[in-house]
Image (cartoon, rainbow, N blue to C red; front, side, top):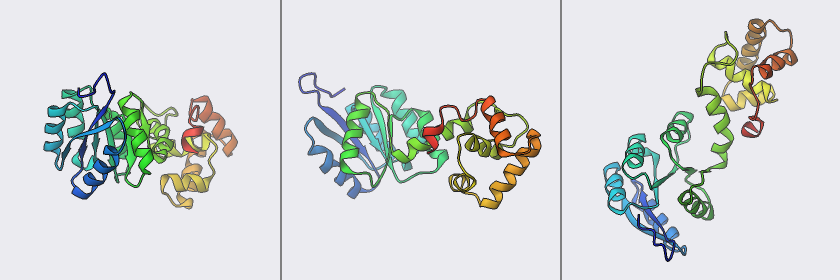
Length: 221
Protein backbone atom coordinates (compact mmCIF):
# COMPACT_ATOMS: atom_id res chain seq x y z
CA UNK A 1 0.00 0.00 0.00
CA UNK A 2 1.24 3.51 -0.77
CA UNK A 3 -0.54 5.19 2.11
CA UNK A 4 2.04 6.90 4.27
CA UNK A 5 1.55 6.49 8.05
CA UNK A 6 2.89 10.03 8.51
CA UNK A 7 0.62 11.82 6.09
CA UNK A 8 -2.25 9.34 5.84
CA UNK A 9 -2.33 10.02 2.09
CA UNK A 10 -5.02 8.20 0.13
CA UNK A 11 -3.56 6.83 -3.09
CA UNK A 12 -5.76 6.41 -6.16
CA UNK A 13 -5.58 4.78 -9.58
CA UNK A 14 -7.96 6.12 -12.24
CA UNK A 15 -9.37 3.73 -14.85
CA UNK A 16 -11.51 5.12 -17.64
CA UNK A 17 -11.30 4.63 -21.39
CA UNK A 18 -11.74 8.37 -22.05
CA UNK A 19 -8.57 10.46 -21.54
CA UNK A 20 -10.61 13.61 -20.93
CA UNK A 21 -12.43 11.90 -18.04
CA UNK A 22 -9.17 10.68 -16.54
CA UNK A 23 -7.73 14.16 -16.89
CA UNK A 24 -10.66 15.72 -15.11
CA UNK A 25 -10.52 13.19 -12.32
CA UNK A 26 -6.78 13.66 -11.91
CA UNK A 27 -7.16 17.44 -11.71
CA UNK A 28 -9.98 17.17 -9.19
CA UNK A 29 -8.40 14.61 -6.90
CA UNK A 30 -4.85 15.95 -7.09
CA UNK A 31 -6.12 19.28 -5.79
CA UNK A 32 -7.34 17.64 -2.58
CA UNK A 33 -4.99 17.59 0.40
CA UNK A 34 -4.19 14.04 1.41
CA UNK A 35 -5.09 12.44 -1.94
CA UNK A 36 -2.49 11.36 -4.49
CA UNK A 37 -3.15 9.94 -7.97
CA UNK A 38 -0.67 7.10 -8.39
CA UNK A 39 -1.57 6.00 -11.91
CA UNK A 40 -4.04 5.94 -14.80
CA UNK A 41 -5.44 3.23 -17.08
CA UNK A 42 -7.35 3.32 -20.34
CA UNK A 43 -8.13 -0.41 -20.58
CA UNK A 44 -9.11 -3.22 -18.25
CA UNK A 45 -5.67 -4.79 -18.61
CA UNK A 46 -4.00 -1.51 -17.73
CA UNK A 47 -6.32 -1.07 -14.76
CA UNK A 48 -5.22 -4.39 -13.32
CA UNK A 49 -1.54 -3.72 -14.10
CA UNK A 50 -1.57 -0.26 -12.52
CA UNK A 51 -3.39 -1.57 -9.46
CA UNK A 52 -0.90 -4.37 -8.92
CA UNK A 53 2.00 -1.98 -9.52
CA UNK A 54 0.87 0.74 -7.11
CA UNK A 55 -1.41 -1.16 -4.69
CA UNK A 56 -3.55 1.98 -4.26
CA UNK A 57 -6.07 2.57 -1.52
CA UNK A 58 -8.77 3.22 -4.13
CA UNK A 59 -9.33 2.21 -7.74
CA UNK A 60 -11.80 4.56 -9.44
CA UNK A 61 -13.15 2.43 -12.29
CA UNK A 62 -15.64 2.82 -15.12
CA UNK A 63 -17.79 -0.33 -15.04
CA UNK A 64 -17.56 -0.51 -18.84
CA UNK A 65 -14.29 -2.35 -18.25
CA UNK A 66 -16.37 -5.24 -16.92
CA UNK A 67 -17.04 -7.09 -13.69
CA UNK A 68 -14.14 -9.44 -14.41
CA UNK A 69 -11.53 -6.79 -13.74
CA UNK A 70 -13.28 -5.86 -10.48
CA UNK A 71 -13.10 -9.45 -9.26
CA UNK A 72 -9.47 -9.80 -10.32
CA UNK A 73 -8.45 -6.57 -8.63
CA UNK A 74 -10.14 -7.55 -5.38
CA UNK A 75 -8.62 -11.03 -5.53
CA UNK A 76 -5.08 -9.89 -6.22
CA UNK A 77 -5.08 -6.58 -4.34
CA UNK A 78 -7.55 -7.06 -1.48
CA UNK A 79 -6.38 -3.87 0.21
CA UNK A 80 -7.70 -1.78 -2.69
CA UNK A 81 -11.25 -0.47 -2.48
CA UNK A 82 -13.05 -0.27 -5.82
CA UNK A 83 -15.16 2.83 -6.45
CA UNK A 84 -17.27 2.51 -9.61
CA UNK A 85 -17.69 5.81 -11.45
CA UNK A 86 -19.85 5.20 -14.49
CA UNK A 87 -22.93 5.99 -16.54
CA UNK A 88 -24.17 2.39 -16.35
CA UNK A 89 -27.39 2.29 -14.32
CA UNK A 90 -29.22 -0.95 -15.15
CA UNK A 91 -30.15 -3.21 -12.25
CA UNK A 92 -28.19 -6.22 -13.53
CA UNK A 93 -24.91 -4.28 -13.64
CA UNK A 94 -25.48 -2.61 -10.28
CA UNK A 95 -26.27 -5.90 -8.56
CA UNK A 96 -23.30 -7.62 -10.20
CA UNK A 97 -20.95 -4.85 -9.08
CA UNK A 98 -22.21 -4.89 -5.50
CA UNK A 99 -22.05 -8.68 -5.41
CA UNK A 100 -18.48 -8.60 -6.70
CA UNK A 101 -17.49 -6.43 -3.76
CA UNK A 102 -17.22 -2.85 -5.00
CA UNK A 103 -17.12 -0.44 -2.08
CA UNK A 104 -18.78 2.48 -3.86
CA UNK A 105 -20.93 3.20 -6.90
CA UNK A 106 -21.37 6.74 -8.24
CA UNK A 107 -22.79 8.01 -11.50
CA UNK A 108 -20.81 10.33 -13.71
CA UNK A 109 -22.29 13.74 -13.27
CA UNK A 110 -21.95 13.56 -9.49
CA UNK A 111 -20.83 16.77 -7.83
CA UNK A 112 -17.04 17.06 -7.42
CA UNK A 113 -17.34 17.19 -3.64
CA UNK A 114 -19.42 13.98 -3.69
CA UNK A 115 -16.69 12.17 -5.62
CA UNK A 116 -14.01 13.49 -3.28
CA UNK A 117 -15.99 12.34 -0.25
CA UNK A 118 -16.59 8.96 -1.88
CA UNK A 119 -12.86 8.41 -2.42
CA UNK A 120 -12.13 9.21 1.20
CA UNK A 121 -15.11 7.18 2.39
CA UNK A 122 -14.32 3.95 0.57
CA UNK A 123 -10.63 4.24 1.53
CA UNK A 124 -11.76 4.32 5.18
CA UNK A 125 -13.94 1.24 4.75
CA UNK A 126 -17.32 2.87 4.23
CA UNK A 127 -19.82 1.90 1.56
CA UNK A 128 -20.70 4.88 -0.62
CA UNK A 129 -23.58 4.71 -3.08
CA UNK A 130 -25.22 7.23 -5.36
CA UNK A 131 -28.57 8.23 -3.79
CA UNK A 132 -30.38 6.77 -6.79
CA UNK A 133 -28.69 3.42 -6.23
CA UNK A 134 -29.15 3.44 -2.47
CA UNK A 135 -32.88 3.79 -3.07
CA UNK A 136 -32.88 0.62 -5.20
CA UNK A 137 -30.66 -1.67 -3.13
CA UNK A 138 -33.47 -3.08 -0.98
CA UNK A 139 -35.55 -3.82 -4.06
CA UNK A 140 -32.61 -5.44 -5.85
CA UNK A 141 -31.86 -7.70 -2.92
CA UNK A 142 -35.49 -8.69 -2.47
CA UNK A 143 -35.56 -9.83 -6.09
CA UNK A 144 -32.39 -11.86 -5.87
CA UNK A 145 -32.10 -13.49 -2.50
CA UNK A 146 -33.79 -16.77 -1.86
CA UNK A 147 -37.11 -18.24 -2.96
CA UNK A 148 -40.20 -16.06 -3.19
CA UNK A 149 -41.69 -15.38 0.23
CA UNK A 150 -45.18 -15.99 -1.18
CA UNK A 151 -45.22 -19.24 -3.18
CA UNK A 152 -47.29 -19.43 -6.34
CA UNK A 153 -46.57 -15.95 -7.61
CA UNK A 154 -44.46 -15.18 -10.63
CA UNK A 155 -41.27 -13.15 -10.11
CA UNK A 156 -43.00 -10.03 -11.42
CA UNK A 157 -46.07 -10.56 -9.24
CA UNK A 158 -43.76 -10.98 -6.27
CA UNK A 159 -42.11 -7.64 -7.08
CA UNK A 160 -45.49 -5.94 -7.36
CA UNK A 161 -46.70 -7.41 -4.08
CA UNK A 162 -43.50 -6.32 -2.33
CA UNK A 163 -44.02 -2.75 -3.47
CA UNK A 164 -47.67 -2.90 -2.45
CA UNK A 165 -46.53 -4.05 1.00
CA UNK A 166 -44.38 -0.95 1.49
CA UNK A 167 -47.29 1.29 0.55
CA UNK A 168 -46.66 2.30 -3.04
CA UNK A 169 -49.64 3.19 -5.21
CA UNK A 170 -50.25 1.60 -8.61
CA UNK A 171 -48.82 4.61 -10.43
CA UNK A 172 -45.68 4.50 -8.29
CA UNK A 173 -45.28 0.76 -8.85
CA UNK A 174 -45.65 1.27 -12.60
CA UNK A 175 -42.98 3.96 -12.56
CA UNK A 176 -40.53 1.94 -10.47
CA UNK A 177 -40.92 -1.27 -12.50
CA UNK A 178 -41.21 0.59 -15.81
CA UNK A 179 -44.59 -0.94 -16.58
CA UNK A 180 -47.85 0.43 -17.92
CA UNK A 181 -50.44 1.20 -15.26
CA UNK A 182 -52.81 -1.29 -16.89
CA UNK A 183 -50.14 -3.99 -16.64
CA UNK A 184 -49.72 -3.31 -12.94
CA UNK A 185 -53.49 -3.54 -12.46
CA UNK A 186 -53.51 -6.89 -14.25
CA UNK A 187 -50.71 -8.19 -12.03
CA UNK A 188 -52.60 -7.08 -8.92
CA UNK A 189 -55.77 -8.84 -10.09
CA UNK A 190 -53.74 -12.02 -10.61
CA UNK A 191 -52.20 -11.64 -7.14
CA UNK A 192 -55.66 -11.31 -5.55
CA UNK A 193 -56.79 -14.48 -7.32
CA UNK A 194 -53.74 -16.50 -6.35
CA UNK A 195 -53.83 -15.35 -2.72
CA UNK A 196 -57.58 -15.86 -2.48
CA UNK A 197 -58.19 -12.31 -1.27
CA UNK A 198 -60.69 -9.69 -2.39
CA UNK A 199 -58.88 -6.40 -1.89
CA UNK A 200 -55.55 -4.64 -1.54
CA UNK A 201 -55.64 -4.49 2.25
CA UNK A 202 -55.97 -8.25 2.55
CA UNK A 203 -53.16 -8.78 0.02
CA UNK A 204 -50.87 -6.46 1.95
CA UNK A 205 -51.63 -8.32 5.18
CA UNK A 206 -50.60 -11.59 3.53
CA UNK A 207 -47.45 -9.96 2.16
CA UNK A 208 -46.39 -8.51 5.48
CA UNK A 209 -47.07 -11.76 7.31
CA UNK A 210 -44.66 -13.35 4.79
CA UNK A 211 -42.04 -10.72 5.65
CA UNK A 212 -42.36 -8.58 2.54
CA UNK A 213 -41.83 -4.86 2.96
CA UNK A 214 -40.13 -5.03 6.36
CA UNK A 215 -37.22 -2.64 6.50
CA UNK A 216 -37.72 -1.71 2.85
CA UNK A 217 -39.87 1.41 3.13
CA UNK A 218 -36.90 3.79 3.17
CA UNK A 219 -35.28 1.95 0.29
CA UNK A 220 -38.10 2.39 -2.17
CA UNK A 221 -39.21 5.90 -1.30
